[in-house]
Length: 114
Length: 114
Image (cartoon, rainbow over all chains, first blue to last red; front, side, top):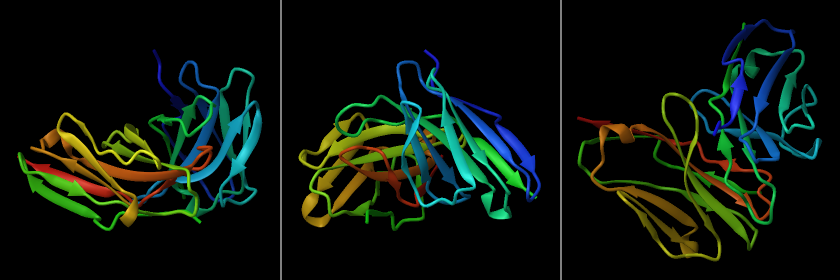
């Protein structure tokens, strides 16, 4: 049973460019959340998608946008990259139900902005 | 606003020692969930335990145990007879009853030396 898969694993961009990160959730999961983890810090919530809609958003600017597809996979887009966007981007999936379900995380996409 | 504090940035122990990782949280919710995740060098966060705010029973799973005390807003994690494979960064996290936004602490880096 495949867990959460993310691509690419590593990428390097320059300031001002745009990037798209991809995530396939664990089989059976319908909800995808994205987190940004700067070096030496805990993950920070970006947003969550369920039924192809953004359900909640953390304190991130509009340069961060996302999408969820009918097969539950998801993309994270970041426009006008800044040096401070360099981080590990983690995708987590879960099954929507009452209460707080366990998040299953992928290994992340490490973005370096030069 | 929700907040998680892990005051210990780094801990080093020698193999077979016991070690306790502290977690203190802040929330105004009456229903909430607490989690512990382990992040090995590979980067993927691994789920360890979930506890809801109405269940204050301590839990033991093998060498791992958790002490939840609502009176002090703490959810501490103890590893008994530590092993080198326990070396990782450990995160405590808090979320509300809907589980849409996980708030992570800054993490504690545990190094178990042989």
